[in-house]
Structures are given as C-alpha cells and as structure tokens.
Length: 551
Image (cartoon, rainbow, N blue to C red; front, top):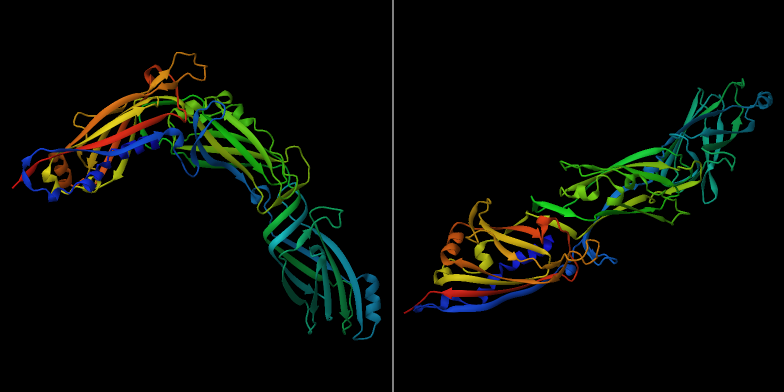
C-alpha cells in the first residue's frame, strides 16, 4: 500500500520532462499567449506486481486469492552453547610404587631400572544431570604438570585411552630427571585439535576419563619408603567443540528477542483494522535433542492499550522433534491467529505497532533420558512469518513522506527561464480499481523543513475516488468487500509563475507529501479486500502557457 501511493506521488513531479521539449531561452518575440500540451507520463500501478525485497513481500493467498503482506523475522534460535556449555576440565591424580615392587627395587643394585604400571579414572565436571558419551574437539589443548617425590630418575609413559585421534590414543613420554632434590617437576603441553574425548571408559560409564601410566624408575642411593608418589595435574582446554554426544538433561532455559516492524512507519492517526492477521512459525531442528517450547509472552511493547496477547496459541506448540542424525533436520509448524489468542492479534495490530517482542521458554528432553547429539553448527531456529491479509478497513489515517528534491532540479526550469512562463498545468487522469480513496497535499520546504508553500491552494485534493465495492453479498461470501468496477477522476494541478519563482527564491529543497486515506465505507467499519488484479491507471499531461515578447 505504501509503495503504491509513493509511486503515484512521484509521478506528479514528472514535469521536468517539459524542459527537454522546449528551450525557453531561445524564444524572443512579441507578446502572445501560446499553450503547449504535452503528454508527460502514464502508468498502471497494479498492486499484485509490486515487488518488495528482503524480509517483506506481497504474495497471493492460494485459497482466498487475497493479497497478503508477509514479514519474515527470527522468533528464537537455540544453538550449541544454549543446549550444553562445554567447560574446560581439570583433573588431579597420583600414582605410587606398588608395595610388592618397593622391596624388590630397594634390593636391586644402583643404576638398575624397574617398571610398574597404574591406571585410574577421573570424572568430568558437568553443570547438571548431563551424561556425556563423547566430545569431538575442533580446537583444544592438554597441559600436564608432574611432581615426583621419588629421589630417583624416572620416565613416565602416559597414555590416555579416552583421548583418541585416527584410532590412536594420546601418548607421551615425560622424563623426570633427579638432580639431588625433590620434588622433581616437569610439564607437557600438546594440541588436541581433532581428538575425540571418549567418556564411556570402553563402554562402561559416562562422564569419565581414564589415564594409564607406565613408570620406569632407575635405582639411586636413597631407598624408596613406599609413601612417594608422582602427582599429575591435567588441564583439558576445550576451546571449540565440533560435536558432542550423550544425554544433555532436561533443563529449562529462556530466551528473549525483539524484532522491528516498520509496516506502519509512515502512517499517522486514524483507525486501521485487519480482519485475519496471523503468525506462522516454521521451526527447524538440526540437533539431536527433543524440545518443548512455548511463548511466555508475545507483545507489542510500545502499544499503549493492548501490549500483550495470551491464549493456547502461545502455549500449545507441538514438541520440536530431534533430527535423526547429523546432517538431518525436522520441521515443526505452528500457527497463532485470532482463534487461539486473547486479546486477538487484530487488536494488537490495531495500534499500528513498530516492534514485536517474543519471550520463549524451552525444556530439553521433555520425555526424560534419551541419546542426544549437537554439533557446532546445529540449531533449533524458529522463523516467524507475520501475515497480514489485505482484508481491512481504515479511516482518517494519514501517510507522510519527504523527498530531498530541489524545485529547480525537479522541473528543470531555471528562474531566468521562468520569466517566460505564465503557468504550468499538470492534468492527472486516474482510473482506480482499489477499494480505497485518498486525498493529497504537497508542501514545498527549505532544508530545515520550514514550509514555504503548498501545491494546492484550496487544501487537500481528492486524487483517488474509491472503486465500487461489492457489499451486497453476505460477509462470509469470498466476494464480500471486493472491488467490482473502477472509478475515474481528473485533477488539474496548476503551478503559476509567481509560485514557481517564489519557491526557487525561498530555497525549496524538500517536497513533503501528505495523503489522507480511507477504505470505501470505512465509517461503517466495512472490510474491503485487495486482490492482485486491482490497479490504478494514471495518465499525466502537461500544459505550458507562455508569455513571449516578440521584438
């Protein structure tokens, strides 16, 4: 609707074509009053052919045939970190020499080596009831600090069967060289990019990491008491996780989002009501997690009368089913309309909101324990499509727009050339098959928006006479409110020489359009429907009256 009127208004200013036909500076003769009538422009503005872009567009309802304005936005998005926040891990373990090895070692000759092995596990830290099976690391690091109480030179072969890449577990040899004092310390840092952290301990557990140690110790002068140990401090940095598997719990989280809505940005005052607006939600789930979601609030926060809607439309969203495997997705659809909201969406829209706010509540795994997966790129995303069928009535509301247009550039006639002009007349012939009527006033303003003059001295002029509309059938009939024949209107727009020169001298740099709009029989609150075949035909001609002096 907005684009239709703005297109019409811009055509009113096409008189700049006149100068391309006439070079007034070349006329120098005795006084006479010729008139030049020139066709300037013609156009058919068919509503169904208006192309919007980006997230706003017009489309035809395949059932009713009515044009609908659709506005796409994102209602909510749940990503990796919303489902599970993978934290870096820290483990502290220690190993000592078995008692049976102590006596044998002490009885051996100096410089003799002995070996012993050990194995232990550690639990990773999770925020709640999560039971994790594995994590694939995209970017991470392993830092190990060792402290040995043995007064002997030692070599530790550390193997972490829980940390695997290409089927091979992480392994490192760490020397601990005794130089006369204990403890003997060493450190190791390694990248774990591309590693899988297997948390099942060979399929027997969850949330568990296993460490295997093989210790080779060389006999020194000091006997082993059996109380010595090698202490390990592990830091597992999980900077970026590619994917994770396991059970991620059934925790509850919330999300809030606000989207701008500029359909009514240029409308002021008046009453505007849409019969059947609706919100269509398409929820795409590429995670392996079932989710129950509902809207705790859908609101127009800047409304003054009705800000919030409620009702089963907000809470009866079907369970968002998990994807079957990585790379798959599921689609869940949900509709919020007047039938399942109170107050209705129509009532919310009547105040011409500029933004909508969504508050959402999620529960993961609502049925309890199940196997889940998430990847860095998987998500649950709800796309909201606000659909406004052009089945409406509106009365006494205004549309305003401002163009930065220097008056001399618009008409293409300089102040010097204007001396030869008596007046410029634009004739506007309009055939309207839209069920709306509109009046127009155009103001010329300086660069500070100070009004210099108006186009119509008599005030707002009616430029659109509403089409004849079918109100004779029952309201439930699909043809109720449909335009059945066009209406014609002819309007002469006169720009005198005095007004034109005044505008140039006053520095007219802006043109302000103000249209007053009503749908047909809006005073009786009758809804009209707009179809793609509805149109406005416009023909503009210019008549240039000159005052020319012949010498």
